[in-house]
Image (cartoon, rainbow, N blue to C red):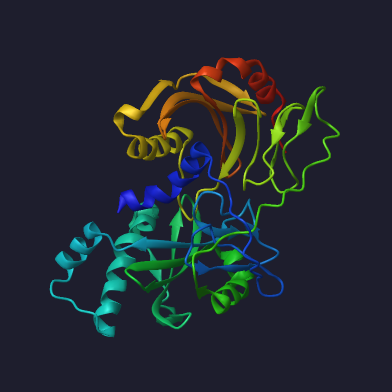
Length: 367
């Protein structure tokens, strides 16, 4: 269970490190007044109102309504792996595929994989269920079940609405998490999201259309590599190329591919992690992908200012596709988000742009 929970968070760093970018548009359109909140490759469509803010850059479909007050929606797909199947068989020996038994499987999954992480953080491990809202549900024609409960987490009562369906050897979990005030305020928005939710072919997103800041406040010799949709200012040397086709803001040196980029990570639901925990999760997945011999941590003790926040600096090497890359990451917490600025270069080019990197870090600011 813990491995599955960690994986979605780690996808953020993996996508950044391996340089994944969005694919070409398929010409899809969302319902009027809504936008697609599905991550690339998702075999479903989550639509949210235009008044929400998309939060899909780290491999989980979702959005939030207010950065300061808990109000998030997300959809996660959990494949039924051999490990998960073995757990279910042990808990429910001999279960089959009729509707009642599938409902039991959903109930078991809800308790073990959806409610247990919340219970672990709730005061006295107590969750209060709204029994008349814990009912059978239909998600795009697929039999599902709705769960409605609340818990006191870190001094705040959080409300949860989860819809869980089993389809094509996977569990799909729609989650709305909010403070009591925000839950009541945006419950109708969530009803609309569920009405329009549908299962579909894997999603190929539109090219990310960046609207860059005009750069009026850029330091001499630098230009803006950010837009109004992020809570930071990233400036890069004028000679660097801005990554216009990626879903994250960044830039590169055309001659050798050295790059810098920034990825925000907003912990979903009740997850609260430190900068060190964030990096540890990323490292675990990187080691899994590159192997123990393909990843080398060089340094993780240096502290520097990133904007007005203190960042921890992580330096490491990783072998990707037969090539060794050197990385320098600046990771800091700001409001309810974690921000990771990453400098990536082939080993031979790493030192060549460190002065420029220092200027990028010095000019970086939160807003």
